[in-house]
Length: 427
Image (cartoon, rainbow, N blue to C red; front, side):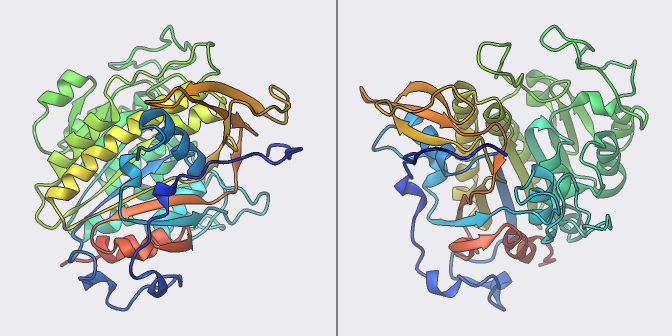
């Protein structure tokens, strides 16, 4: 990926993501207690799961967000969860030790490591059982919310199986025909409509004239309507939507324009992530057997690829608002497990003081900022080492039943070990 640094960079690690759980000694192994599904040691039986992905978010992104949004003594809502740990992210890919979002999400959704680009299939292309479908078979409601295309790699791995993450129209088809999530909210209308059939979001918009309907599976929006989904394409329509099966597509592709700073970059989703998250929770929570909701802020990753710190901080603020919605729900529904993490690091980000000097702007290091520290006269610099992903660990924070199992360091497949205890249970 990126070239190695010629000097040691100083990373400020947030103390808020190192909370200690009382059962630390009992959960360091990759296995789970035999009675994990019925354990009462952290609040009772888990009935529902909210899993939140800050795509591309590692510890440095969380620290930059903390400084910018809450200040030196502040604490992000995502770091206030009582349990924390680390997840490694490497894939099972013969060409690289650094994951992409598809392989990372497959590890979560199936418990199996695979090659980059794979959506819940193994290294031989064989489809793997997926938690989104298993949760539905167990009687739970399911949903996904993202600022990316709803058929992008991270949500797709929970609800579809394909050898190629770029087959987004096939992923959409599988949503309707196979896994049938109850709530689908995000971007990517272009993949639901055949070429030459623009929908609510016109082809070739001014902000990106390359965007246009491109599906090959027929008019999937019409198919969704016939299958009982309400279709909405604006914030007003979403607010007016009744409870029930819901499909909302709020952009042609991603819900933003991911470009370098000052080159047409825009982060202004037609519906913000927190609003979509609340609507999904209002809808899914009517099921007495519980639900599974996947929530994703994609902008962190996409703007980190562009080394665009200003937009990354905007995306972190968006994620933080969605986390607050989720935490409010968990406070009122203590039988819900909430997990917040990232699928991988993007950008090789470090957080530095403004007095640091290095090869700024070179291919070794690109400084970004300075950015203000909230409530202070101090500032910080976001220093990028690559425009790609890296292999560093990502923090995970959790609360609710079974949350203490996330204490310690685990491979990303461990997410599946914990979540499957809740999502495959019929009790």
